[in-house]
Length: 331
Length: 234
Image (cartoon, rainbow over all chains, first blue to last red):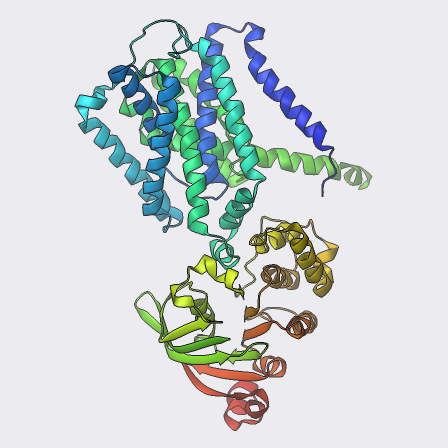
């Protein structure tokens, strides 16, 4: 057992959470705060992916479906029935969990590339369905969320940066959940499945149910991020919340950050969202294409050099630090 | 007791077992021997429900295994140690063992099982925090058996425990298995090393091309001309 005082680690986490909430005190530019807010949204969404994709290594390429359901359900309830996103968000999360249950039923018997491809295909089907259901979803043009007034109850603020505190709180909640799962019996079962599904089954683990619980929990997190996204941008369309690109991005954030640890999505999104933003902002549109190339290169680099992502680098650094004294003695 | 009547099993469209029957009584040590690809591993996988199977009867202590979900089978006292030491490589020794005990809710019970496993395999007790993939082959096999024992099984299905291990380690492991058997655990052992299996077990079945070709006490089989010629090389 590593003999670290547990309160020391907990204090560190509390300080980290507090620091996250205190970022606005730095008086950064509006632009920086907008990017920080969006980063928070994607941290939460990617954390939802990690529960199933990282912990159990079930690489789903359809997590955008959950994001989209969260965004669309709360937005449609708001636009058509004037339901507050504080109610619409949780309803969207429940709808996403239900969708996860149905998708899980279809795909959990598959493994590896088959699993990834079928989740991708199902996500595309959802996108196409939403595009066809124009009367209620707005179709390919999407729906805009009308700005009613500056109100916490309606989760509407004049500026994207005004959402920062709520987004940061959601990050703290999501990562706390991801961390709790990691060290819980559910986390053990997921790791066992990741390492060897047959052995897990022989150890008496209900593989199907374990995957299902993680997938549904993850769907809830990603859907909540979707709701927040819709409120911040004031606009929802299939391209931004249901696309393959988003599904791949969410997986990438988690994988590049380190898919097997709870803080991986934080590290990955905190690196990649601002990076993507910076590249899209520069070079008159060419940057947007460049961002995808850089994502691709980063992914290749991660897979080749350090499959465990940023978390893997940190771990090997820690190991090197511990090994350092003996290295100093060696000639 | 485990009773199997007319068990057939498939890999996709290929029938790999053609209606085998065998029994294992409580507390017995039974070996299933045969050459490569004869159907030994398949038989164990069929018992555990890891492949498609059909049988006139497949019961353990009155429980119909054909109607039991694979993940629920360990709860009925059957522990399967698969071929090729399938341990959780990303986990430490102790975590591997705890996954094996995850059906037990009581911590005291888990601690008791851990002590038993460590007393059987002192090598594991010496390195509880070591990662699974850094263990030697023999230690991995011991860990796989230890993990199975954590669930407090009454029937242990062992698939090629000696495979790829140094003779000294094999001896060490079989001494431990002997002790496991002495605690009253029933053992169905699959081994390619026929002389080893016949020495350990009291009764054996010989399987050839998915059919049981011969059965008897190990003493009889050791002296059987066909066995001596085909499997013992004497």
